[in-house]
Length: 295
Image 1 (cartoon, rainbow, N blue to C red):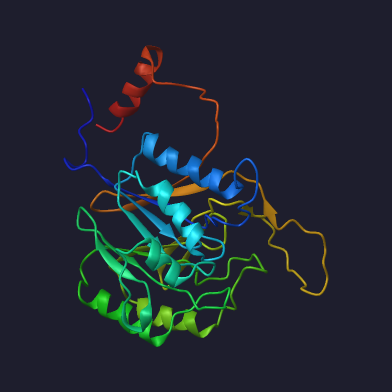
Image 2 (cartoon, helix red, strand yellow):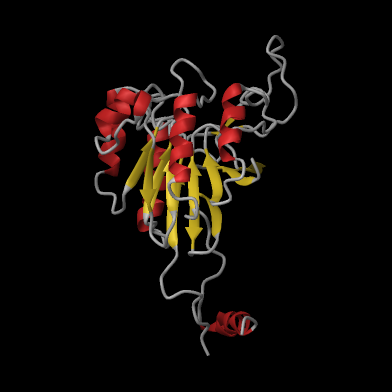
């Protein structure tokens, strides 16, 4: 006997790619490394077994915010069979993103943030945490008022928030904010007690990280561009110690699965992996036995 699905409606799959950094070294031959990594990750989403319902690009789409890099990104996305939700990061520019993605509309103050009503009752909020000229995040009173209003208008709707900058100290000293930065305190004040928020998902740190913020699960999706090295030791800005900073670990993306009741996030590295097992007749008894345990 087969196992009946939990819901007649298939789960919603929301892909997240972050920190692509197109245009970092456009003269690389035969092709810019970041462009190659983006192309491979996008192909995995389109041609792989888990084609998503939508794709969130959670900031640092480009390395310099220039129109040419945004145009290169849009060209690769042209035949994408699912909607794309673009967001600004500290390496992007709002003008560049608006020129490339005219479907995005600026809110009060010129911030590029919006709400998407996804299938199965899920609400997605994409926040703008860019402050021009600043590497770290920002969340001013205008943005706080906007987010508070969006949460208040649907207090019972399960909500997923995307933002570029993680409002947490992760231990990667040279990338972290100070724990008491005003923008972090302001965001915490807005989100405290907002039990409809299922999770917050960020980018920026180029590493996989899980924690909590304001009592809400928070995840950081690793980058499509090369990753930040895993080194949690303190750093002295005045003493170059030859530590690793950036590594050639494979590009990674996230796939957030919403089944109408719970949100689960998966992370996949993109590479030419060897397949060690397939579902063939010899393994059918094992698979059937695992399903039988659920009955």
